[in-house]
Length: 112
Length: 114
Image (cartoon, rainbow over the protein chains, first blue to last red):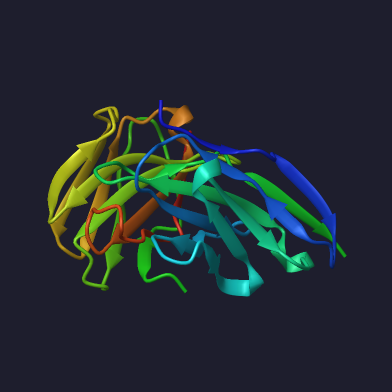
């Protein structure tokens, strides 16, 4: 079955720590990859996306993600997190002719 | 701010009530979606409309009835819901229902069924 796996259910960091959230998918072929963020009580916002080209993509708020095709991965990174980054992070994958599939999400808690 | 607008933001309804959730976008997108999200869970696709026609129904119970009156509007009619239907209902849109298009989400409607 098609799936998107996010390795970390809950990540707790102190401010200024570096962040890496894992995302793996199980499809072959061409995929489009997304990271969405949902701040407490708010709607889903697009952080970044990869369709083609440079596998290192930069998004809003200092986030970046690297697509590694051989590992079927699209990990999210940020060099230095802030308290305001506390949120739920969802990786999502879409193939041609299919719906957008979300991972289960990772809760990030940043302490000041 | 999101350009997908949903109303109402909060709705409490009884199990015998009939209510509707509304969604509007003015980005010229031709694909619109309804998702359901439970707390701390990922969004789950319910319906997809492409060019105002229902293209995907993810085996959603008939007590949820979508409607797309025009290319900018998407409604979700609710009737005889159960308490387990309480969730955040997200509307979304994209330029077309193609994998290369980004899906943009509204702020959602929080539904509580009592």
